[in-house]
Each structure stands twice: as structure tokens, then as C-alpha cells.
Length: 323
Image (cartoon, rainbow, N blue to C red; front, top):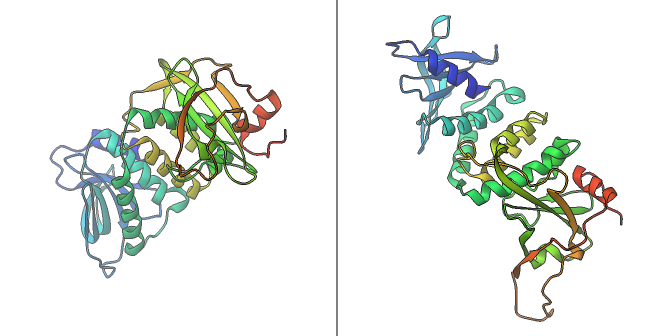
């Protein structure tokens, strides 16, 4: 929503306008979206003149608290008032899209309403900390694409998103009711994947399964951000939406909306295969050997796949698997 509104405002920015140009977001909330002559976006919160705090100046983001300002309102003349201004010091469309999407999940929808300057400041510092953790690589996007595909194919993407482990370096991608699912995605014509010994032979009673996804680059495929947006449209819980989007950015990098990588399954019917970790051979390590963090490559092509009943349960990520 915010990015589309931003694009329209930037396109209509009045010639010679010396103030912010914007529109109110969600009537009655005191929340405005605006752009300046450089097409830098700002989110403005109605605030009290007495709610004074030190401004925040970060690499891309600046926050000015309780400032008197004028807004040339889209079709409504000029508005004046006291606002806290969250401004992105950037007009690159892809970075703006990510920034506004994060602001939308943080401050709009179910989270809309009066915000104190303290609350705004804390939330902006959280987002700034997120931006400091982002990186990007094709490998990250490919891996993320496979995990997003698994979520999108579930009967309830919202339920599947709740099972998604909220740390980019978690041992497993999904932990469900009594089992874990690790997703491996490859552009190779064979199911060659890298595992750690701890993943396939964990301690305890947890059952572990592997979803092996073979993909190809294709003009008719989907980009990672398209999967992100379609899943977000199926998540109603505001906090889960925000957590889901943040994890997508941590796993896919800051350029997730810029990536031109479009993927599709190598085969509609056989592109995804499910395996039990117990059927995957692992190196034999003596229990008292001074060896740890064992990782290895293995081809799954000739290993037995899960039957249709187990596959259906794994696809939906909702029930304990019973062999």
C-alpha cells in the first residue's frame, strides 16, 4: 500500500513545491505519507509539542521529533501541525519499497493509531538494526525461494509461516508438531545438497524430514518478492506478518525486491521430493572422537522418497508424522 501511494505522490509532485507533499493514511490516525522535491519518502505521525526527544540520524533513516511543519495535501491545500517525521534519505525505488513495506507492517493496519515519540524511536532503532544485518547473494535468494515455496503450497500459509524458524542460522527451516523439515533448493539437475551431521542425526526424539527442491531459471517463473507478497496477503496476524517480512529480508538480503532471479520447479510433479533423514546415509563418527561440526555433500536421487500420505502431511506442516 505505502509504496504504491509513494509512487503516485512522487509522480504528482507539484512543480515549485517547497514543502512536503503528501496524503493522510487511514483517516483519523494522524498518520501521513509524504515526499519532498528529491522524492525522499517520509512517514509523519501527529505528535504533541511537549513530547520532545533527541533526533535520530542514521545512515539511511532520520527521525525528527515533534516538529512544526507544513504539508501540501494532495487535493486539500496546505496542512500545518506538529509531527514526528521518519524520513528515508534515499530514493532508490527498491530500497524505498523495502523501507515502506517495513514501515507499513510496523505502523499501519492493526498497528495504526497514536504513537508516542518513545515508541516511534524504539521501533525505528529496531528497523535500523535490521538494515545493518542485511546482505545479499544469489545463493541466499535461491534458498529463500525454496522455503517460501513450501509456505505458499501449504493449505494454510499462515500456519506454515508460524512454523518457520525465526533465525536465519537455525538448524532447521521449519519445526512443526513433532517433526522438523529442512528445505534444500538447487539449480542443479540432480538432488545434490549439503548437510550437517547434527541436522540428519539429531539428539532426542525429533523426527527430521528433508524437502529437496529442484528449480530452473525461467522468464515464466516467480521472483522471491512475488512469493513474499502473495504469502503476506494470506497472513492476518500483524505481528506474524512483521516477523515473516523481517525473516525474508534477513535470509534474502536487502536487494530482495531488486533481484531479477525468476525461478520455477524443474518439474511440476517431481520438482519437490520429501525424504526421511533416517534414510539419508551419514558419515560414521565415533562417539568419543574429537570431531565436531561435520558437514558433507550427498546426492538424494536414488534414495527412497516419502509416500503420498506422508508427503501430504509434510506439505501442510501441521501434523505429527506417523510411519
